[in-house]
Length: 472
Image (cartoon, rainbow, N blue to C red; front, top):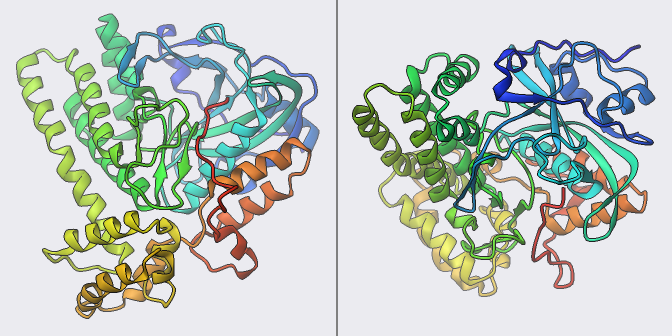
């Protein structure tokens, strides 16, 4: 069979000012590491021979119908505006319409320099490629909106980072790669025709029921509110919530220095470049509001009545914290087995989290163990849990089937940082067994898998990952 991808490329039909036409740069010796056949079926992709797919997903050959482009955008990075970013190490091959009727981008990440590379090499090394593959697919299995991984390929070339590293290319799939920064670049340049065209395109592609720019803002607010609440519910820390990493489709995008918490603490930071804690776990809701405010500022530029637009946008953005709180509370109610709503639920949940932080309780294992006999074992002082559980058990008495709710809301397995790092180190040595095992187990995160109990274990003192790196 020959690899075929049924491309239908709408973004490449937009004006040339939206992107640069750029083919991937060929690599020396591509070798296919992973291929997501389940996702490929949704995308209506017909697989080819292994060597052919390695060539295509490395960028050495272009499947028929591909129109490779590097997309333009700008963005705020740690609060500072950068007027031009763009795809510096990625090319969008094209789009497909899947069996579910959804249009999705297929993008090569690490495929060589583009006009937006800013003197970078445009490449990725194996570690970040495998991390994004594992973590993005784990997020999908957890039920959290995310970009996905279609393929990973070794390039047979060396990439220089902290030292010489094996090169790799990731094939990423997204509902689109439209970011807050995509709107910002045209607004900042005063290119209002392009901004209007982009707004119309985004509405048509993602939110056809949205009524104009402010209607788009409303639905993006809701999508981001739901997304951030979902992150918080599994202890996920994105690490770099810049506006160029904020998808208007409401998907998790750009897995750089991302991580899942082991011991719970609201101020947890993993990103090596986040020295001030801007993107700490507990700050993520506020940053999401800040990012959407930047989208509002951009969208307003195209409105004829700017005073009215400012008033409406202000109302929409100011309502977002309450939406975030509502979505967060719904998620965390489920995490302690609650379906009905009572006035004291927020205090009950907050009290548990405070006690977890004070007692170095593992986030995932504590919630998974609720209702059993082992939750108290997660606390350095188990009586802290016992005191809390008295009120919780009284609250549960007014619920129906809390056990099913708990099991559905609390995963047994997450991609723990130390396991991801161990997987990367093994892969660098040519051993992909840990990668395959993690991928298999994390595909069923809510199921008890006794043969994988070791993957539930928090890191020992010598295994703790204190900082994560972009590294691509």
